[in-house]
Image (cartoon, rainbow, N blue to C red; front, side, top):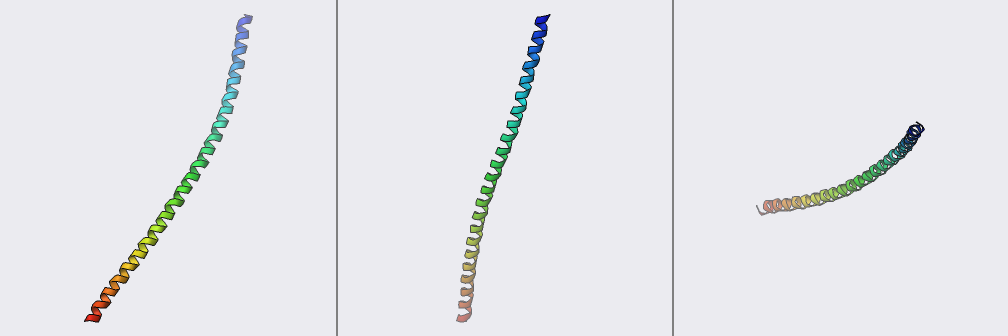
Length: 84
C-alpha cells in the first residue's frame, strides 16, 4: 500500500513539474509570436516603402513622357497652322 501511495505522490509531483514547464513554454511561445509579428510588420513596411517609391518614379516618368508627347503634338499643330 505504501508503494502505491509513493507512486501516486511521485506521479503527481512529476505532473506538477510538467505543468509548470508547459506554462513557461506557453509564455515563451507568446514572446516568440510577438517577435515574429514585429518582424513581419517591419518587412511589410519595407516592402510598402519600396513599392511606393517605384510607383512614384513610374508616375514621374509617365508624366514626363506625356508632357513630351503633348509638346510634340502641339508643335505639329503649330507647324500645320503656320504652313496654311
